[in-house]
Length: 301
Ligand code: SAM
Image (cartoon, rainbow, N blue to C red; front, side, top):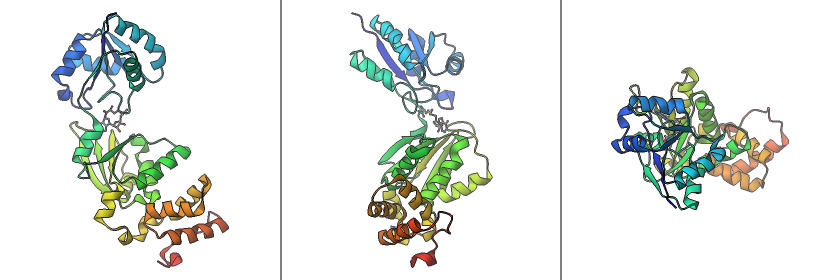
């Protein structure tokens, strides 16, 4: 039986000049091009002056497209997968298709190219030797809280994607997790005419976007715990970094768990001594949530 090939092709994230000759050739010679949005990829193809057989492939129709895609591949055709921009599969569709065709023993190749995460990391000035790609945080709920808590303890640099209308919320949540003093680099509109790389602490970025409406597409590179601690020992951190400790405690108490364990985790996250956090947990369990937040004078620190 003839076996075709699936090729994952990266496309520009902002500058058409970043379309590689190999990527163009793959699109030009494909029997079928799968794309998230036929209008978006249609514009790219028009710029490249290519006429190509396009089929939409996104998270809502992926399963129903698989039989047809497999049929075409088994018939020996070359199928290309692109996303709206950047590397397919990186916060974009394609993972299920790749697993499927690997299971079927159909050949696969990748034509690499632009990617917003690595572009922003390279300019961040933060530790790029070890990093974690987080993509988009869950929008809300327990899943979001859990993930935010994990970010605080992660030793490596963190890469986050964020939509402009959610940027301030995310910066606010990071600050509330006691990460206000962490450095954060924000890459915006990369690599377009008005690209920007901004360098802040989380608290500064939050203040900036409280007054300025974020516009465009953003990648956040957050300093990991290891670099933060090596730069400035945790005991020297300003108590201001932990001013929202009460919120953190209430959140963790609501999620449940052993008090000592909760105290330990919050201590690691904020730099407050575990015993102080534990005492505060005991106090907060007795008083209503509206009571004033922990101040230096309350803590004895
Ligand atoms: N697959 C893409 C890649 O390889 O970068 C990412 C797709 S994801 C759906 C879209 C998110 O990537 C945006 O919300 C933004 O966070 C980030 N992004 C994409 N293009 C960008 C750009 N030109 N400048 C900054 N961030 C960008």
